[in-house]
Each structure stands twice: as C-alpha cells, then as structure tokens.
Image 1 (cartoon, one colour):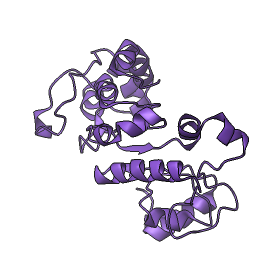
Image 2: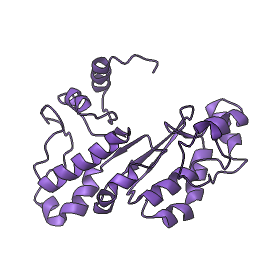
Image 3: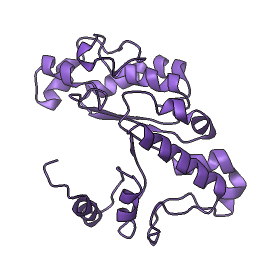
Image 4: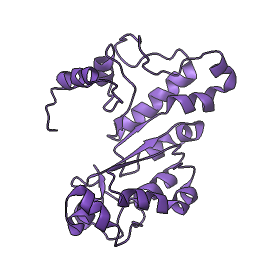
Length: 230
C-alpha cells in the first residue's frame, strides 16, 4: 500500500485488516509522504478500544479500525487465544507488550519535505529512505541513465567508517536527513549491507538490514553480542 495521504490509506484499510487477519506480524507502508497518512496507517492496524496502560504513548493516533472477528484466524496462526491476540496485536515499541511491527519507506521528495513530522508519529518500529525511488524522485531519469549511484551496499562496497558514500550531494543529504530523523525518534533505520561494511553500518546507527547470507547475519550478531533466542 502507498502512503500518499490519509484518504488513500483509510480507503484501503480493508487491505491491511485482511493481511493482519491472515496472521502476519508486520506491515510496511511505501511512499509514506506525510504524518497524516502514517497516523492513519497505524490506526488501521489497531483494534478500536482504548489502551490506558500506554499512558498517552499513542496520543494523536485515531481510533483503531480493526473489528471483532478478525482475531479468530490470526490467533490460531499465532498459537494463542483470541483475547490474547487482541491484547498483543498492537504496534511495538509504542506498546511495549505489542507484537506488531509497522515500518515505512520514506522514498520520495514529499517524504523528505515532511520527514520531521513523519518520524514523530508513534507506532512505527523501523524505516528506510528507499534509495531507488528516492533517486528517481530527486535526480530523475538522466541521472539513472548515466549509472548514478543510489547508495546501496552492492557486492564490493568497501568499508568507509560509516554509510557508503553515494557521491551525489542531494542523495547523500537526503539519506542523512532521513536517517538522523529516524534515530532522533528511536526508530530503527534500515540500510543494505555486505560482509565488508556491516560493522561500519552498525556503528553508524543502522539496526535493520536485509542480510543475504548466514555469514553476514552471524558477523553482525557477533559484533553486537546478540545471542539466540532474541
């Protein structure tokens, strides 16, 4: 689903409800362009009762749109009762006891323009700046046709002591601004990684990556001293 605006997200809330009813634990909203769209996204993933135990941590989020009945199938997938499910099916870390993970792609010039307000929205666990779409939005076709870098950690990307440089100031600045906004609001930033730069990326604040090998995963886990089970 695209987060073009609140109306788009609300009109398609049934998609989110059906996906969650199938038992999934996480959802991503792509092209999250403004805070209103993100707040609506969070509300579509929540049940409609108040949660006073959160003590206002969900302030500003509209009333949830999920209704009774959706917990029956999802709770079977999760291996718990329906009542336990509706208690746990709430976004973490906004709800410390919640077990839904919501994330965003802030991947165009509109997201960039609104990034400070977007990242203040409660209910989101992690996000990314969407290098491919961001390059399309900020740089255009000519840049892509020339083979311009998008900042991904492709094989052979060497360690740099931080994020791999893109070499295009507009994209370097966009990535830094989005990453810094996420970190300031305690969201976990995503960035692609490889065996050469995974440790540098962790040091730079990257907390989520799409590892393509057990070796990469184990190298990051060893550096952070994480042990299974999590």
